[in-house]
Amino acid sequence: MIILETIRLILRELTMEDTDNLLSIFTDPVAMLYYPSTLKRDGVEALIQRHLNNYQKYGIGIWAATLKESQDFAGLVGLIPQDLEGRREIEIGYLFLRKYWGRGLATEGAVACRDYGFEKLELERLISLIDPNNTPSIRVAKRIGMKLEREIVKWNKPILVYSIYRDTAT
Image (cartoon, rainbow, N blue to C red; front, side, top):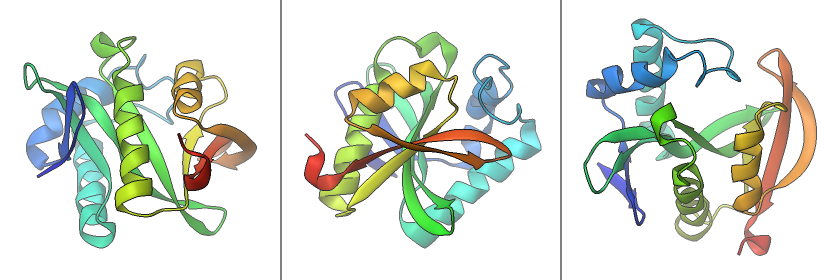
C-alpha cells in the first residue's frame, strides 16, 4: 500500500517480497557501518515482520522507498515507534542503497515523513536516533529542522537524539 509520494519517491509498506532488495542494504558493511551489524536473510525477514506488525499496531513503520521514474527500490524511509528511556517516541528513519547516496533522497523522504507525522498523525514531536559518527545522517536531521537534544546509550552504544516539535517545524 502506498503511504506517501514525493517529487521523486513513492513510499509504500514493505512486503516479504522486499527481502532481496533489503539484503542489498543490510549485507553491505559500508551501508551498515553505524548499525550494530549486517543482517542475513533471516534477520531481514524478521525486520520486515516487525514492521508489518508496526503497521497493524501503530499504522506506521519503515516504508520501502522506490523511485517514481523507474520503480527501482532505493531504500527505506519511515516513522518508527521506538522505546526511548521508557517512553514511546516516533523516529524518522532512513537508510538507502549506497548507489543512491548523495542525491538528497533521504532528506526528501524524511521531510515527507516529518510533514506526515505532524499534519496527518498530529504528532507533537519526532526524533531521529543517530550514531555520533554518522555525519551524513546528522546532516539530514539538521536539514529537516531537527536539533540535537542529548546523547543517550541505546543498542549498547552512544546515540544522539535529534528532535523536532510540530510548533517549530517549517
